Image (cartoon, rainbow over all chains, first blue to last red; front, top):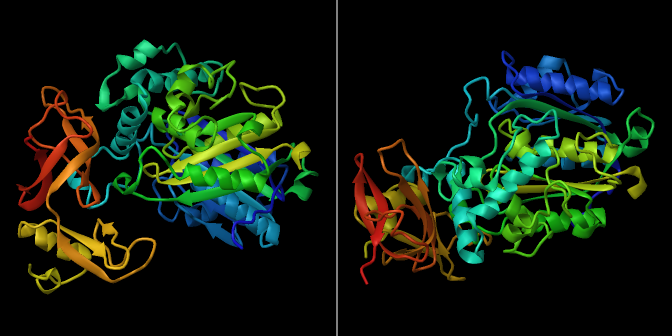
Length: 383
Length: 129
């Protein structure tokens, strides 16, 4: 009978970000550890309360072990799951199941990267497979470009539609002091930007920043007694359909079309119930694909949906209210930052706080549109 | 045709690469379902059926998607394409002898095996119509 999920049994009790933008002189492990300490303090807990650890650093294959050693943790359970930038949504799923089962009592999920001040390029241990590598696709950008090109061919999506995603993200970032990229950005700026892997230009790419984030999860009944407003995890699901983009049956449909409906079913909500959406926007095409696959607009209509102004400030569906990976931060893996922004909106403390946020969706993406994972957070009133 | 299994030692990938070095583009077909499989595997994806036949692709295909990767000027951009072979498999490759102005999704292409730094490489050229 697979697929059941303990709706609302586990909650985010604490959260933090640290070093977003540039954190010169810090290692990735130091940044992640600092965010972890801040999140534990935010939850009103002590370090020795942590008995479940979920870590996935960009430059350390066994980072779960390094992180435990660094903070002096002795977790009952250490999860080093690496499904790319979506790993943190999967960490939340595992943590929620272990919490509900009573196997652990307090989970810490942490991430950090110094990729901007330590080289200025995406830090990743991943590369194209042996079938693709001889053709020199940019990893991972060309895979997203191949999806964008086909979406344009099939549905008439334009580069101006892609640009509308970047412009909306910048508009949110401009009123978020934590966002790294602020300032005016127009559709014309995007259209005149240098093509890197057509049809994607420099303006279609996420930032390369430093930054760290962490959340603490515990059982909701316990989180109710902690200092900060508990943010229950209503539903969550992950799905994997391929790794290399050449193996996608249809590059315009991602496994978000599976993870989304399964997460909605677990949470007992649908797209119309979501007050704010955080999508993993490594590239502008991501936002369009995930809006479609998660049911916010029909397949093929994502380009027109964003061009009509729905996702920016004042729009009908606020998306990436922190500025997203395109304009707030993208330290190599963005998933945990999407989760933190969703939780902040429910706690009522986001930089661009929206009114009456009861249900928020955060969606993670890993690899080359490969791993997809969706989490739906709510307020205590939604239980 | 020669049975590839007897001409190369190792797993399906080694068999495929050995055949390519001899100028042949191999695909697999699951005997029961008829599904065409690439990259070569030990068993049919999703079903686990290990009863697979090797066969030689005709070499014709259609561009499913494409991207041009910029290089530092004056070096021109190069393309990376997803090509659907007529038999039903999709692979990443490139199309030679084209420009950003001439290559389109839907272009019919023909396979060519070239030497790339001492190793055989499968690329495509436009199919003359």
